Length: 277
Length: 295
Ligand code: SF4
Ligand code: SF4
Ligand code: SF4
Ligand code: SF4
Ligand code: SF4
Image (cartoon, rainbow over all chains, first blue to last red; front, side):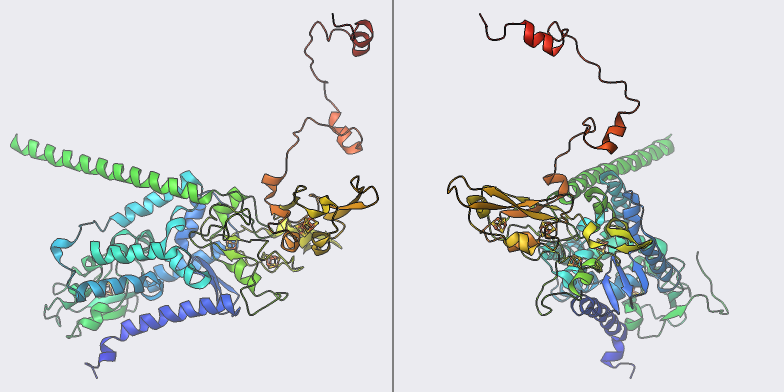
């Protein structure tokens, strides 16, 4: 059972099912008027009642100088609280449609041998925070939500629901960037939404937990992790992955043959949990 | 000493890096800002009913498409099997001239925002305005399309001001003297937003022109007339109101309107420039001077 291929990819399969179902529900919401999920990732409604909104987009609108209706503020708060207190940066790996594009680019990169350390353009992982800051400055100056005009995430998601136009160009750009320029280039280095979620999801409850006693130092987890800097404790300390940059994708868990990594719930009372705040 | 120069170097490198970072950010920011400024600016685009003024609209719309979905799934959708929604969410590169020279179109609709193209699908002026209430941000404001009925505030599509219809008298065949009232009959506010004006046709001497005339204070800009117009490129078309309409300025007072006269109260009158000619009263000037004798 443990070596079953399905089991080995349980989180990957789960993520794809979640990503695609969310997308299909949105599409049905547009075409057939289903009320389960309406709108798109920028702002939507569940069952015609519960509002949801992208807190980063709302922040940009706010900086651009708009007084917003309460609907979208409540929606942003719901999403914000969910990811920051519970889900972690799961948006990136479980919901965001660009994740499928970049995962594919990454897979191709590995399969075709395009991936060589020396071919990588070195970009700091901090770049996303610069882009994040810049997006707010530009939003303020230009009095419009700056990232929303160029966001490949919204373009892809909106495009799949409402029609793509030239949105493929932006999505293709991200794909090529990840394929040829830097491994996990977009999601791990540039995307300001990812940066935003990294900053706010530090306190979240669902966390990967490392058990150093079981670890055999094979480093499979570090090889597969798109944010490997968060796995500094591998083989060293039995602690949870507490960085907000972990996207809760579960890849490290799938790949570990020694059961040294697992999802855990941070606030469950436990005997000896050391946290690095 | 060696220690301190090392520190200095480290510090210099640090500052240079910061400056480089700032430089890159400034460069990236100005390209980005320029792009957005370009992309967000297109005035010839028609927004859904209840849309706040364009500048504010761009600031508020979160591009969720809830208005578009509501429009698509409205009850009076004429044909549910096709893409018959009035509103669409602009995809990148949604340039409007689909057929060159056929319609007047903006160069690009700001990406992700809702708009409509009347000549393709006009707004059907749904009485319950399904597109407005779902808007989560206030980019579509129910206040702008509400009126008070029996002491209660109700949605009222007739208050929508999506644009205003403009007649091109050169190409409207009714102005040629041919009989056409397609636009007039298509208008949901027939005889209010658009009326037929009778005028004698001097060419034949015995026929009448039946001229469509739009009343901008009533017209909602729905575009049903534009869709109905029989000419190849419509001779009646909807433009955003700030483009189609003029502005008189505050200094004109309509003497024939009691209300407007009120504005004169407390006014000190107008300061005139006095020239040798205007020193005399107009009568004096006209009577005294020999205007015909120019020599
Ligand atoms: S630590 Fe594990 S769950 Fe977190 S991003 Fe890396 S692979 Fe994914
Ligand atoms: S009022 Fe016009 S834009 Fe609104 S739902 Fe009806 S047809 Fe669509
Ligand atoms: S519902 Fe409002 S925020 Fe959403 S796309 Fe329409 S106008 Fe924009
Ligand atoms: S004149 Fe044309 S745009 Fe104006 S309300 Fe009538 S049909 Fe609509
Ligand atoms: S439908 Fe067109 S051509 Fe006919 S009267 Fe109206 S504007 Fe003129």
